[in-house]
Length: 154
Image 1 (cartoon, helix red, strand yellow):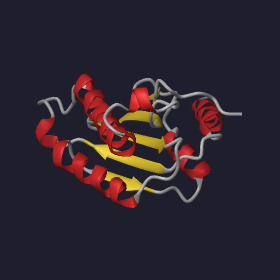
Image 2 (cartoon, rainbow, N blue to C red):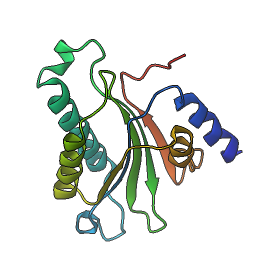
Image 3 (cartoon, one colour):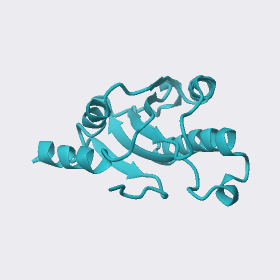
C-alpha cells in the first residue's frame, strides 16, 4: 500500500522541473532529552530558508512584485529511527535557473542556523521524487507538505 501511495505522490510532483534537492537535518544540540525536535521550530526554520531564497531571487517585496509569488516547493518531514526530524525537499524557481552562488549561500545559512545541509542539482527528476516520497504513507515516519503557491502542472 505504502509503495503505491509514494509512487502516486512522485507522479503528482513529476510535472515540475525541480531545480534543487535538499536534505536538511537539525543539530543535535537543539534536541530535547527524548531526541525529538519541536515541529513548530523545524517548520519555521524551513520557511526562513525559503524566505532567504525568495528575497535574494526576487527582492524583499517579492509577493507584490512577482506573478508566481516565489519558489514552489515540496517537502517531506521524516523521523530518524531515534525520532529526530529531518527534511527532504525539492525547489523550483518559476523565473528560471537559480544561481550556484545563491545555492551555496543558502546551504551555508542553514548550516550556520540549524544543522547539516546538502543541496544538490538533480540529475534525474524521477529518482529524486522517488527518494523524496519513499516513506510517504507511513504516518509515524513521514509527512508531505506543499508550498501554498503549488499548482498541478499539466
